[in-house]
Image 1 (cartoon, rainbow, N blue to C red):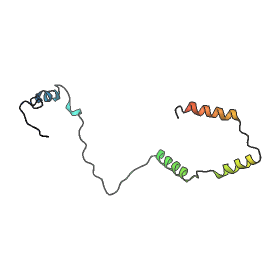
Image 2 (spheres, one colour):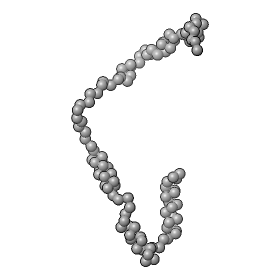
Image 3 (cartoon, one colour):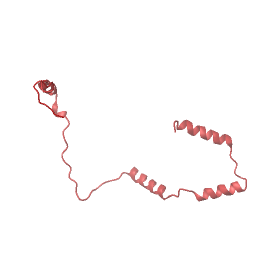
Image 4 (cartoon, rainbow, N blue to C red):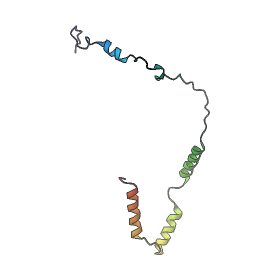
Length: 109
């Protein structure tokens, strides 16, 4: 493909001055409010940071949750014992109410 420079090129013949005129600030406007670039930030060899009390609480909670086992063996053992002794009775109405309540609280999930 060959590109030719032509005097009839419509892009070349457009008035660029009109665009520059419209970009000029209007009289009476304050140009000091225009955003200025921030100075470069120097990074030292070490950092000092402070963590809020809420951040510390969240880190502690995350650590406790990570350390907790995924399966609660004590609950499973209790349920197995109750099922074996025919002491575990499920109330269908309570299960249905719980399911409907969860659905209404979390629509679309």
